Length: 291
Image 1 (cartoon, rainbow, N blue to C red):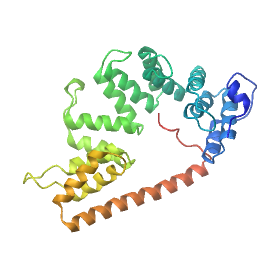
Image 2: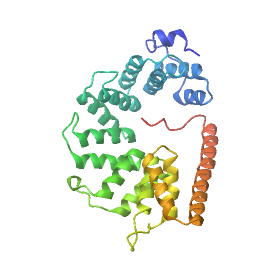
Image 3: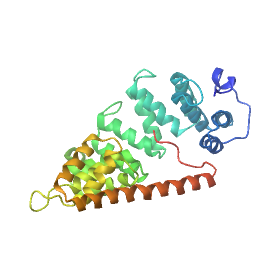
């Protein structure tokens, strides 16, 4: 499948007013109608919606529906930024930060990422926080980074929740964070609930901590369950933890833990099916993919 020639040769040069919106394009994309979605995104951009350029850029960057063209994608993101697309600000900032498609430019990256953060975008808040944490393009400011991650976490940004969970697990004197395992666990529970491998693994580790006897895990069954779920999501350390726990557990407890992992998975599959049905009813008004 290929895009219409107008999209390949001159993806955003036309400005004839048309009636289209991004949600319509997302609905078409969900249905697998990539060419129609691309046309709709372009029309949305021509009508003044910068997010249209962002989503069209994502198609070119990922090669969905046409040959991948990261340079054209970057141009489209820049066009989206000019029309105020927060999504385009975040993505273009990442490209400047990575330095693979565009010349690496930490100052420009931080400017764009933090513009997205100021606009309330959770991904922008997380990425701007990273810039402050690493001192890339802005002065190093760990406390400001944590503040931005807290804002992103409130917006359900999984990466920010994991970073904060790690910070509270170990404590971070520079950020003024005292170790708080209970608060750390709260963040990891949120990311685990979203199916995030790192969050699941961290819960497994917390439940696998030895109890009063110094040997027996605090909750071996739960630890095994979470380690199993993280292992199938590609974490080798989780698989090793699961196997180590199994060597310490009774056969009955192992079966109980395996059943719990299966029940956890089935419950989320049912939730996903319900969510897909809701998205269809809303005609594609779902949140954009995380960047």
